[in-house]
Image (cartoon, rainbow, N blue to C red; front, side):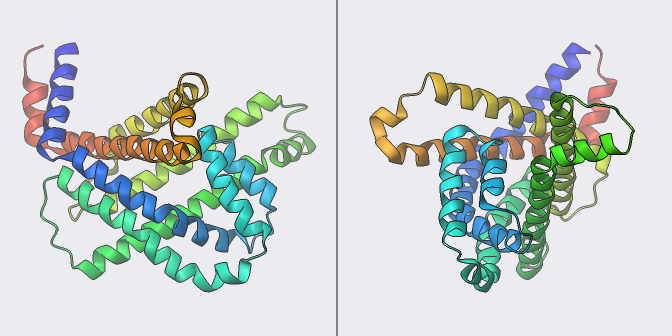
Length: 281
């Protein structure tokens, strides 16, 4: 079993190198950096209709991102919402969504290459898919933010129903984060399934999704720990160092998403899996 697992890891590594996924991750990071603020503009234009206070929105971001990155995004959100620019947000939402979808368009191309299939869909179709993924992503973030922000409200509602006499806050927090993780899993299913032009069973997507979710959580925590205790980037680069940190974090996230896609591609390779399962342990 261990040998088969090792052979599987080696195959994933070889295909990552063969398909130049690290180069794709560099390009994807650049596109995501260009897309992040148009994306936030589009997201805020939707949140503006939900009567969420700026403090609650900022808290949801700040508590679920590495500290310096959360601070930078929080400052942007506070600057936009604090100045009451909702009319600007509403009028520019369509342009912002289209601009932000560029990152998803690059991601679709990269994920297609992990499966080594020719992209035979028209440019307009792939662009529409990237726009749809963008809208789904915004919708999922809004739901996730509601879950994380209103966890205490849900807790009190459950207690009032008499289902549980009292629910410790740590349990509520854990449950809310599990639900949020499940929502992210749904998004990754959409992302991996519709990024390629071939049919693929959802069960073949689960290994890559599990890798992406778990690795994302671990690396984000370790990254936050490193920034808080060991990194001296702020001494060397000053305030612009936050941009370097943000780019590095996006790069790591891009690598994880693409490696997760490559894991799915290997699982979907029937010839390789038959050879692997039939090999001697």
